[in-house]
Image (cartoon, rainbow, N blue to C red):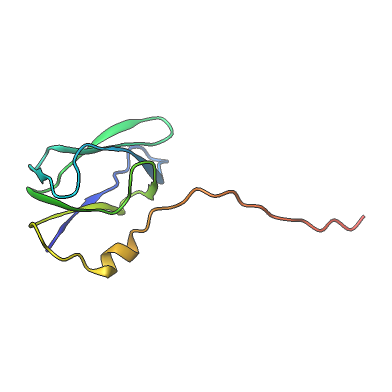
Length: 107
């Protein structure tokens, strides 16, 4: 079973982070404790370390995308290991979008 790479919480008020750079690509071998990506919040930048040894089998949140804290951003497992669609669906990256609301002002 794959091990999730989790978006960390870097501060008390941090609710989401941006994946700035993946230092490893899908299919690359990683060692436990090795930096696999760099993430940032409004104030901080931080390297995320691999929680296990294995192969980076899936990047769930691409570079430049935003993910909530404690969500999976990548998966480490064995080469060729299948990733369940359940895991992929629960960790969709958040697209930044403007909220356009129209107010009806009866003057």
